[in-house]
Structure formats: C-alpha cells, structure tokens
Image (tube, rainbow, N blue to C red; front, top):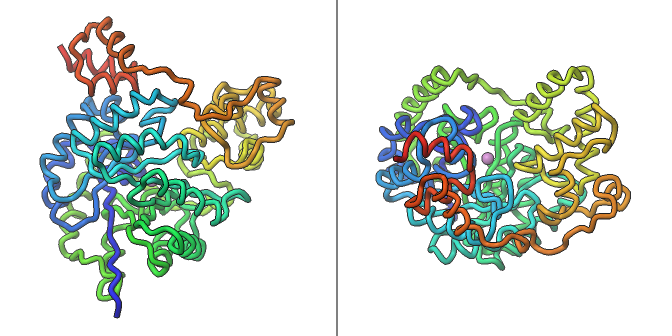
Length: 449
Ligand code: CO
C-alpha cells in the first residue's frame, strides 16, 4: 500500500466564519483555542486576509495587524495562511506596486507564513507584483486559479494558468472554487490534468454551497490532490467548506490517512459550537445556512442571490427577479465570462439588475465600463465589438497590466495621514488607511491618540 497522506488546511479562523457568520469572529473568541489548533497537525491555518481585515476595523473595533500578531504569538508551529486578492490586496481597486509590496512585507513580518494570491479574472499579470514580493519576503507563495464553468474554462485553460503561476514562482497551486461549482468527476479530471504536468503541491478549496463538496474532495483525493481546505464542523457545510472531522475519519486507515486524530478535533468542535452561538446572538446573525443546488444553474453564490433579490425589492421590481436570473448568465457571457468572485460578481450582478430594470445597457455603472476597458485585466473571453460599442463607445481598451498606470502611492498616503493628524503613523496604519480610508480614520479616531 503506497501511502499518500492528504494534508488539511483549517479555515475556521477565516473562511469558516466569513462564509457562515458574516466574518464576525473576534480575536477574543479565538484566543482560548489557538494553542490546541496549533497542536492538531494541520498543514496550515487560514486566519487572515479575505474579508477579515475590513471586518476587524468596521465591525469589531479591532486592529487587524494586532490580531495577526496575537495569532502568531500562539500559533507557533503551524503556518498562518492568508488570502490576498492580487493587485487589489484586500480592497476592491487596483493599488500601486509599492502599496502591494509593502502590504505583503508587513503581512509576512507580522506572522503570515503562506500567502494565497488570486485574481478574479485569472489574469496572472495582476499577481506578478504580490507574488514577487511574497517570495522575496520569504513566504510560501500559493498561486490560485479561480474555478468557474464556461466555454473558456476548459481543463487545458486552467493548466495554462497553473503553468503561468509556476513560472511566476508559485510554491503550490490552489484551485479556488468559491461558489462550489466543481463536481466530483470534474474535479477528478481537473486534478489529473494538473498533476500530469505540474510538479508542485495542489490545494483544493471549495464550498459546500451546492452540496457536492465532500464528494468532490474524495474524487480529488483519488486523483492525487495534496491539500484540502476544511472547517471544523460548527463552521463547516452550508456555504462554508466541508467539515474537518468527517474528512479525517473517512480517510483514516487508508493510504490517504491525514495523520490527524479525530478525537483531538472533538474539543475544538465543542468549543467553536459555543463560539458560533455567541456570535449569532451578539450580532443577530442567522448562521443556519443550508445548501442550495440552484447555484449550479445560475452560478451565482447564494449570498449574492438574496442581496440581488433585496435590491430588486427596494427598487420595487421584485417581480423581475426571475428575469434577473436569466439575465445574469447572458451578461456574464457578454462581458467575457469573468468568474463570479469579488469584485466581478458585484459588477456582473449590478449590470444584470440595471438591464432588467431600465433596459439592456441603457445605464452602465462605472465598474462595468472599467471592466470592458480592461482596467481589471484581461477577461477570459474577448468582448464583442457590439457590446464594447454599447458600453464604452469609441474609448480604447487597455492591453497592458492595469497597475502600470498607477504611480507610487505610499508617500502620498503617509502625507495625507499626517495632514489628518497622524504624522507618526506606523507603516501598518498607512496600509490600513490605503485599503479602507474612511473606516480607518474612524478606527484611528477611537484607538489612536
Ligand atoms: Co472560500
């Protein structure tokens, strides 16, 4: 029996609560369990980045950098992993290279060991700067390819992106299936394809949204995947990851045995079950989120479906919701088949909503124009001249890396912050201000003197 142990990346401190509890887990909720989490034998613990940074400042009155240092103080053996949106860092716009580089440096200095970096369009030019900085800072760089389904997302297309990521120096590859679209047998084929030519570890990240995720993991494991992302059960399933305990139990005694003792996970599950109840009470959240297989037809993550429905209701167009569901895939195709992940999901969603409310491409939000102009990078499929004309008229499209247009920003941000009354702001505070200026100033007003 040839052993091929599967590694587990635990997401409870980031994606688990981001998916099921509106990213509201506080550092005080985590603290009592950090040493035990560190002792489990996880490949890594995802605990930073994604929406946690914004949530710390906006909702929890916490300094995200302070949170990272506190995590690192207690998680000493297991690498702390973060999720970074390439040139968008953790925000929604492209930033200058000096901001991206400094952010990565400070993240690594403060405790991040593995940086997972992705771009919504799989345009690897948007990953270059962050990957280079992460490598230089000594982090493990995980290049992510965003998974979606379209005529322009065949396994050969994903393989090409994976090769590009290896070329840029990736230490491992992540398949990021944020909407839970990856079906078990499709996963088998995709992993086999990648494994046939890519010689660095492959990590599969999926969500339970459609209900297929644990089956998908099992087939991915049979195809040779190296790492799977799981969340301890109270923060698993629904729109989060498959649960850690049953995956560990299912693989026990097989060549894929994770080496993790399931008994060691029980106290963690008991602890985080209480945390979930507390968070739900304190922030009045419904954490009881079940699966919704509709995502496979509309390719719209569940949370976004309900947001869109609410927006339509506010505009008094609730009856047009079924039309909107039909419109989304059309708009996505017309805009070059972007995968639906932040920020492209919002861009496609708002365009589709305007189309059904006021007529097709009569009103076009700025972000949609920017997408068509190439300001987010290259779309997976070209956009037809007809649609281009409708959206940006005769404006030219840019064909270079979008951040090439952005002059260095760090000095300017420092000056701005000095003018606001913080002349001695730390580099971390400057970066916080760069990402979320208004929220940062409110936070500083309360927490800096
Ligand atoms: Co995720």
